[in-house]
Length: 314
Image 1 (cartoon, rainbow, N blue to C red):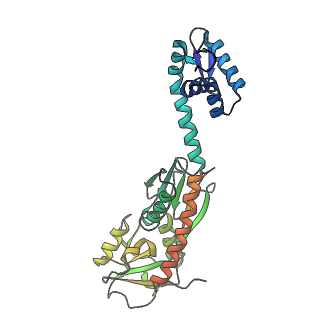
Image 2: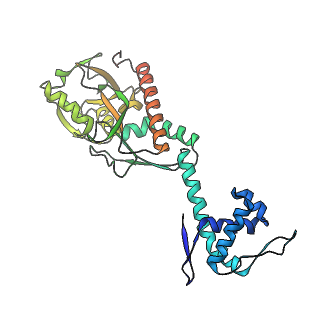
Image 3: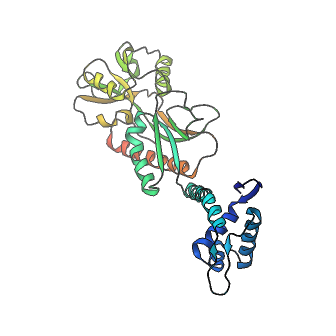
């Protein structure tokens, strides 16, 4: 219970006593104030008496009969000093109630693919459910997610061993090439050896892809690296080289007449996007995680229909 110290006497006033004073002053009778606060009238009278002992004087004049109690100058002073504390308590209670109902704030780490193709629908649906929720997104291409400063982090790798994780979606890697450079159909992994290639930085999922290249004895000639997915596709379109990219990273290019998509045979491991966290999550963060998994499943289902280059799934 929050307290304030009254004057030189050091008397302690708690919120319960201040709330009783406020209710009687607002409603005009002890009976109405008791009903609002859920007390009996005698219990409320005892609280006002306790308050008066602690502040050293009457806070109400009680004319008796049908006449309303009148707040005294001392009562007005005590109430004016206590109102900010009461307002703060009400605000705190409201925030706690909204937290349990799924409101509040959630801080989320993201990266390009998630920002572009997953989060728009997730955010829209979450805001429809919780219009007052505060959603903050932080985009950073890194293999070391800042889990201690964020509620949730999307990452295209497993992340730290001590992280809690759920799989959001997985998408296969395809070869992206300027139209006419590669024959229609699948591309054998060995055909990428010594071929000019545009690539993402060698972290997270890209490190897995390049590990698969190395395991197969394939050493592409990487002529340009960029963390920008659009930069990769722009340079492929310009003829600088081919690229091996997760399908959803180039989702917006799937109808581009200047580019072609090709399956890899044998395939390199799928990109797996996880949502990482550490410790207890708020109801709002839990709901964002649920929506992300749901939207991720929808994306993968749409992907299978939209891209015949994607290999069949069991």
